[in-house]
Length: 222
Image (cartoon, rainbow, N blue to C red; front, side, top):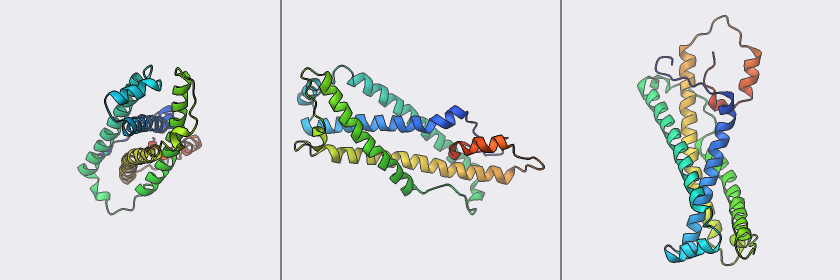
């Protein structure tokens, strides 16, 4: 910690796989949320919903899988929100003097949202089709629906619900990611303003290492 600026140390493994893990959990969470929304829209709640879930092979795995995905998503969201709150508190505590400075924080929120949603939406659609076919294959009739659950005449709500669900979750994820990246960039600017490194050459190996990592993970390295 330098003054009121917190420097985070990330291991190479965390730097490489942290964002991938968050993206994976967001994708699976969007899949389960959209899946439930689609079945509720088609069958309502209560007995018809339970009967439809049982008839399509959900009983064996769906509840424990959805609990695991939901719990993991909640934990990752809590960590991200706490991280954002700490960065905001650090900013309010003493780094507001950097406000007039031009801080390079990367693409804006709309770019982050577009990038996230255009990857999340088709991925969740593909996983939904795969999920429905696997459930049918392991069900009693082994009647694979193919793309009928998404493109069939009786499935007019599926694509809109998948699009809306992924867009809402992408909006939330993009907002947290963009705001965190912005505050991290300001923290980095504060570090550079406070620390003076004199007569010390940057090791070439460190330059290669940081060039290979997502820059949002690297704030400072002595």
